[in-house]
Each structure stands twice: as structure tokens, then as C-alpha cells.
Amino acid sequence: MMSILRVVTVLCVFWVGTAVSYSWEVVHQDEGRHEFYSVAFGNGRYIACGTSGFAVTSEDGSVWSETDLFPEDWDRLKGTLKAIRWNGERFVAVGSWGTVLTSSEGDTWESYQDSIGNTSIAFEDVTFGNDMWVAVGWSGSAEGGHHIFTSSDGMSWEEQESPVTEAFHRLYGVYWDSVLNIFIAVGNNVCILTSDNGIDWYEQESPIEESNYRTVVRYGEMLVIGGSHDDMWAYAAIITSLDGLEWEQQEVPLNDMGFSSSVYELVVGEDALLGFSRFFYSSDDGIEWEISRETEEYAFLNAGLYRDSVYIGVGSDLTILRAEIRETALIDEPARDVNAFRPYVFADGLHNLRLPRGSHHVQLFTLKGELVWRESVWAEHANEMVPLSLPRSITDVGRMYIMRVIHGDETLFQDRIRF
Image (cartoon, rainbow, N blue to C red; front, top):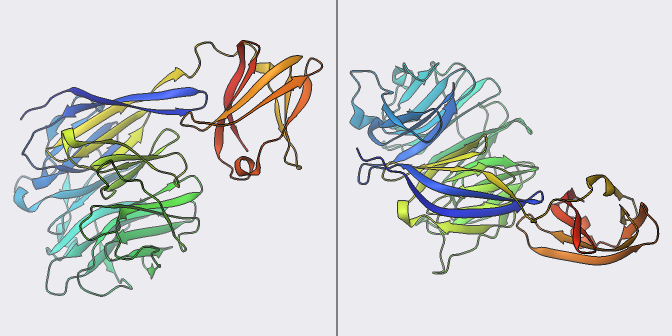
């Protein structure tokens, strides 16, 4: 096996008066040897798994070693693992041929494929919520269609009825939203299903025709689904919802060649939402998106996660990427007197700053560092309350910005603010 370490790029996102920089490093790769489909963290370790049951583990996300998730008599060729999750007490991994594996610590694994009772099922994802495991997938048998299984312990499983019964429907992702207390399952052929108990499922309308959805997460006040809006998985699709019932399509930019690529997994990170694919998609609000960079050096990324200021991405050629967040100041010199800055918000829409005597320049930036508004103000007296006439286009949206106050030649204060 070839395992390499390589720095591939630097991606910068601005927020909270600082710049977030992180360099993606290829910390594991074996070209031509299949791919990883999922990664999880639990019991003090990362575990990534994929084709033919190949799996690796790591304590820090930098150094990885091969591990075995299957019993000794298991046929690895029938054991591609598509998803692995940790619920705080045990790991559950699912995959092809109705595979279900569980482990309480990540070292010793048990198979519960017999509980599924159907080796034609290819599981694609699994999640835990409301004291229940939910696994979704599809079947290549004559009846076709997708499948939903539930379990209270990860060992005994029961199939649930789906409102979509047509053949050639597949479920690729499932997610438990602890805010609305619902499960959401997504798949191809514009499939969006919701359930408040994992047993009774209801189909929701997709805002995009011919869409294929793969992943869903909560980001702030919104639920976000990622996938593609064509049968070839060549053009990315992002839709959002406040209630899980009504969904709205968001615009996803194209690259310089005029195309994008299906979003395979959405990862909630440090004040940003990332989409993993052949590209990195990024958004600070779930609505406005950018293509951060192409991942051609290491092909497709199928999955990822974020924890403790570290991103992990896994994909083809058994590639694992690692990026650690580092913060640097947006300005060369820190604020002189933090206590001199006191914002107040009033009902009339005016925002007031308590400022020292003299002339000041107030600037407002997006979290990416783009200047969106500026105003020069004068304070007659020390600690005077000076009103700012901010436009409704800024104050009514409720987004977070970076505000900078310049007094003379010095930056008096710089910090985040949400209107």
C-alpha cells in the first residue's frame, strides 16, 4: 500500500475579524485500489471504510492504519461499506449485500446481515435519532425500488413501508434533524421523504425536476439537501427548507468550463457549510454558494466530517484529505480599545455606536472579506452615541458581518455583528 502526505492547496474563508486558512493534505492514498465511501469519529478514533470492506483507523486524522471490520469467515468481495456512523455508544456500518456491522468500541465487529434477510439490498446510508437507527438503500432484485430499515439497537432490524413503490428508485442519504424532530431520506428521481418516527414516511415535493439527491444536513435555521439536477450527476443541485416540507432551489455556480458536479456530502464546519464532490462547494449561509477549488489531484470526494477544527475528506483511490483550521488576524494591528465599541440596535432600524471624540470610518464586510457598506461619522464628545443609517438590504437579512471602526490612522475595533 502506498500512503503519502502532500499539501495540495490553501482555501481561505473570512469571519469574526479573522481569516480562516487551512491547507488540504493528502494523508492517505493508494491509487487504483478502490475508494472510501464514508468516515466517522467515535470512541476517540476516526474510521473510514469503503470498497471490498477496506477500512482504516486513526486517532488524529493524520496517521492511518488498516483495520478489519468483518468477521474472519466474511467474503470481502461482497462487503462494500457505504456508510458508518457513531451514536455515542456504538458504531454501525452498512453496505452492499444487506451488510450491517456493529461495534461498541471500533475494534471487534459483529455482523447482523441475517436480521435484514435480503442480500439483494444495497444500503447507502444510516443515521441515529429519536432512540432509533434508520438505514436506507435500494434493491437490484426484480422488484427493485428502495428500502428503509429501522432498529433500536443496531442489531435487530425491521423493514418499513415507503410511500414510493415504483421500481428504479434509490435512497442515498438519511438524516435525523433534532430541531424539527424528523428523519429525512433523499434519493434519485426527485425523492424526498420525511418521518417523525422512522416508521411512517411521507413524500415531499422537489423544486427541481429530474433531480438526484444524496445528502442532507441542518445548517443554522435551514435544512440543506445536496445532489444533482441531471441524470449524469454532472450539475450540482442545492435545495433548502425551513420546515422540511417546502423546499427552494438555490443557485450553484459553474466552473470555468461551464459545469459542476453532484454534491456527494454536505459537511457543517467552522462558520461554513462545505459540499464534497469533484469540487469543494462552500457557503456561509446555505443560500449563496461558491466553487472553492477542483479536486482533480485526488479525483472525487465521497464523504467527510468536521470536528475540533479539523476537516476530513475521503474518496476515490482510497484518498483521505485532512485540513486543520488556523486563524490569523484580518488586520495587522489588533484593536486598541475593545471597550470603546458598544453597538445598540433600536426598533427604528438605526444602529448606534458609542465612539470616542473625533472622525471615524465605519466599514462592513461579508464573512468572505467583501466590503458591502461604509460610512464616515463624527462624534462631538467622548463616548457619544452616533447613529448609523444602514440599508434594509443589510439589516433585514439577519446575516453575520464583520464591522471595522477606524479612528484616524488606527483601527479602533473589528469584530463580528449580526443584524
